[in-house]
Length: 238
Image: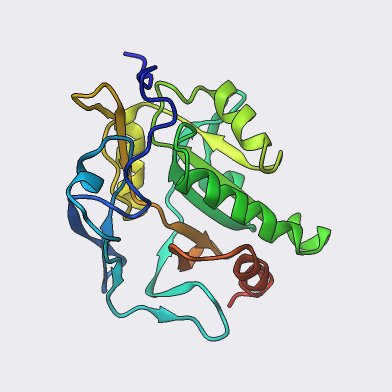
């Protein structure tokens, strides 16, 4: 079934980034428990309930030495995700991004705030680095709304931010399973009683160093300047 937003609610997104009604701990590596709250994109329950920003806690995590992102207590190996790229070809994340700093984000193109803001911030941060640095960075966007986010839609949307960004899609079951490998909660899109669609997904950016291990994640409030500051350091193994 193809998902579409009700014409009577164009661009409606009553929930703010990092709002939601569910919270579940996700194990990362052996020691780190990340309490992630799905960002509800579409629907009206959270705002109507008057909820404030949900707390995102990272047990045993802290700002990295000199970094502006949040450092994981236990590094996360890059999952060997196999999805479909914007050309309709198979894409193996681990092989395609080997030796590069890889920023991975799960979201969807119809999201009117947190997803485009995150992509824009990463693109702006990269624009503040040198060409030599940018060549060593891969940005991967995995859709959480595969019925609407076809390869062509992903290409058109991501090109607005940076033509080098890679968009991946697959079945809902594949994407949900792959998100679990990152410790990111993702739920299938669902339609609300008012006709709008809700797409719940965790909204952090996971940064995998060139050695294939993620030691840093980026949460709400990260600016382009923060990305520009951290990316060269991450390339050097920070």
